[in-house]
Length: 357
Ligand SMILES: Nc1ncnc2c1ncn2[C@@H]1O[C@H](COP(=O)(O)OP(=O)(O)O)[C@@H](O)[C@H]1O
Ligand SMILES: [Mg+2]
Image 1 (cartoon, rainbow, N blue to C red):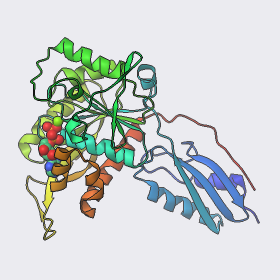
Image 2 (image 1 turned 180 degrees about the vertical axis):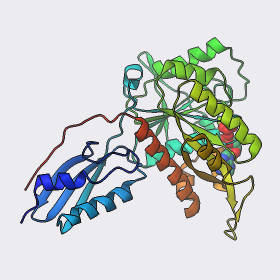
Image 3 (image 1 turned 180 degrees about the horizontal axis):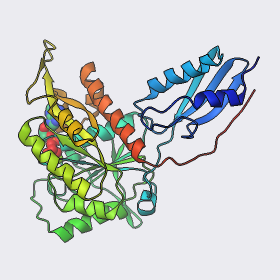
Image 4 (image 1 turned 135 degrees about the horizontal axis):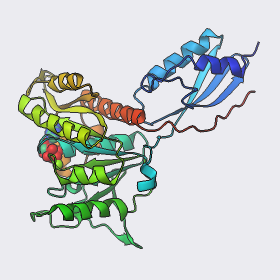
């Protein structure tokens, strides 16, 4: 006897997206159902190509469908990144804006911004990277675009492209060795230009590298666009954590949702012996995230390749040439970030396509 369409959808109502907390049918994630006797093919549309829950969802779907008698279950995956409500009115084509901030400089904010952007792009998302650290732009160097200048098309600036990202930075406009002295209104003007006069095209995620601290830039951004949320980068030692908490409180005051805390330079794994050294107090950021009730996004180790690839402008090396454990730590962080963005973004209904054979 052939399984019916209704039986299958009922079974799939029993599978929850573990992060979004609703079932796959209500979330409009079931894009097609193909039944042939007791063999079932399901089209599932994830809310991000970097879904951290894909394996879990697969297991749960197989279990529920086998319960109703399916002999074989095949899943066709696709992904459609959902957009943050009201963002498209302000930044047409851009679905999510993620600010990466920290309480102070030198904790690896730009590094984490680059890892986030490159990681999401490697998973198949369309990603832009906006260097809003107007006081000390370091993104051009970190993605290997130091000598480049953006071109103008019509009334708009074209972002530069590197490692699969669209990139814009004040560093393209000013001499990198010259100190830039900015007044609040000038910062405001430049950021507005970055948002309005740059031809970003279609982006699933725009990652913004913020300057350290709690100044004009996050304030202007929060007032200009409905940001999806902020990632707070911190190092585990107590003094650094305290600064990060200040930054986190500032986003909360500005009504910017907290996507989570990531602990950078969490530990060091010796490449020769594989032994892990707890340099600064690994785990402190997780405790702090739990205490504050915000998501913890992961631990990024101190790694020589992370530093050298930042200096050389070759971030792909982190995903290709580091040891497996470091790559996994980075990708776990990237996927948890994508998961948190999906949670924050809207659940736009899309039509269900059913085909019964
Ligand atoms: N996990 C890491 N492992 C090794 N070096 C790192 C790591 N994170 C950051 N760094 C290095 O530390 C320095 C400061 O990082 P950066 O991202 O520029 O910090 P920020 O933007 O917060 O000032 C850079 O040289 C960077 O390559
Ligand atoms: Mg920086």
